[in-house]
Length: 404
Image 1 (spheres, rainbow, N blue to C red):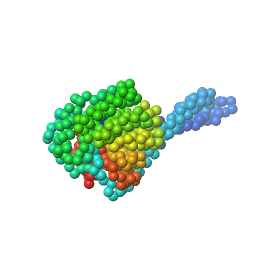
Image 2: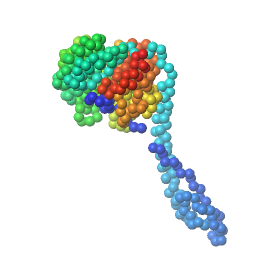
Image 3: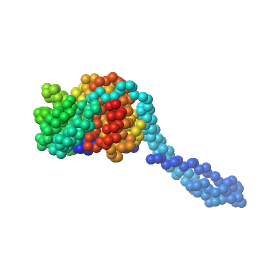
Image 4: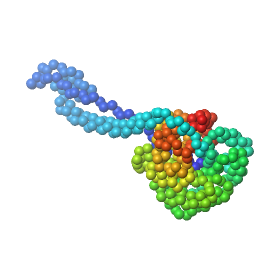
């Protein structure tokens, strides 16, 4: 997802030739000639691409020259084929592995633990939503496992400040939700583009910027929010300034008994993949599993943006989500809520195939990963991205596959 009210990409998460066939080597075929080169019968037609005079003697010197010229071309073709195979075979192997990861049956009881969440657009705090919308939202959430609303209240300015005009209708929303949907927490979703890959954006390496973000958090909690949900992208694996910021933020939220949650990048599908992809594409995208664990230990909730995965099929996408679920469970403390993102939006663009990244595939993948790694984990759920792009079939798949 990015930090505007559109699916991304928060996160905004990347591309999938067929080698030219190698020509069969042509044999040099000249008929036998008389010793003096005269009176020889006509030879067979010259093979394709070979030079011949059409008789048995031919132009032997020219044929040898062209044969020599063909050798580099054949070498280039073979080299190209080897390179293509070297790239395609690992990719094919990865797809087969993900497809296999999507097989099997989830464990009994791997359904909602009533710790789910949903991202809501900016219309809920800028005056566009009314009382009737609260009533409709209450009806929509009834009987689900949703406990947290991540309401877009930003974005933050690049210097870390947040104008109060950005969330001018927040008090109305918070009071209405607490009144009409008891037990639901309203968190302020704040984000910004980081200056990690372009000159423009937020510079977390500046102490004054981090201090401004902390102050903005104090102000947003004073407005009545039950917590703060941060989505800062693109955030590179190992960013120590981000960890420092989380430590400061957690002091503020803990003191006010408020939630600190973040939207997290996906984890390396193979160790070190973020470094490889950063070199190839200039956008690391993934986090190391170690860094993911370091972040998870500093927050109350961590929601994995498990969409925009470049997967071409439902089965490989579901297998990928299962893998991500397992990787995240392995390093997330049991005291931290781990939420896996569900794609409640529909786009076809680079990195996201609508026919592949479906809610049913994501839910099944989540259940498989949970079953294989920590089936009884209590602090676990799913996060729905995003309300304004969701279709009825997404809600149905969530209810039928996860809520039950």
